[in-house]
Length: 137
Image 1 (cartoon, rainbow, N blue to C red):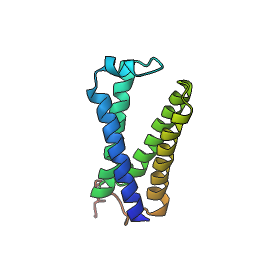
Image 2 (cartoon, rainbow, N blue to C red):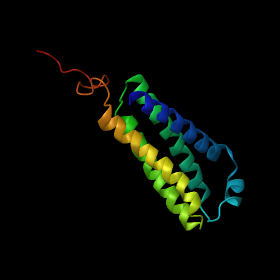
Image 3 (cartoon, rainbow, N blue to C red):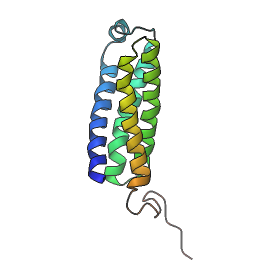
Image 4 (cartoon, one colour):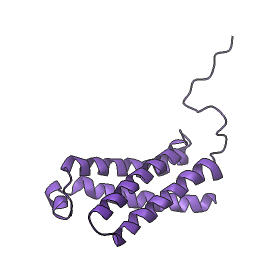
């Protein structure tokens, strides 16, 4: 199960890194031309930043062992983003295209559950490496 979760995490991280990166480098006017509903430009940039940070959060904490609990939280945060994407796509009138963010959101939910419950980080019952140890007297 661990290998399957890693494959899924890497694929989702690549997807969100690409989608967020496009939102960060494409001019706002160009993105707004492609949108059936009007969104503020700052919201598109904000979504891009969140997607890039979510992609990083899917990989780095679990890989380094520094705050590995952030990986399922990043996946859960991306589920929220995908719920918004499903709603936006349905409101735009394209119900069939709403299946794509729905499936991506379900895969993010699988990563969140898998990393939280199915394959918790080894030694997660121990205190974090970043917390100072208690002083002995």
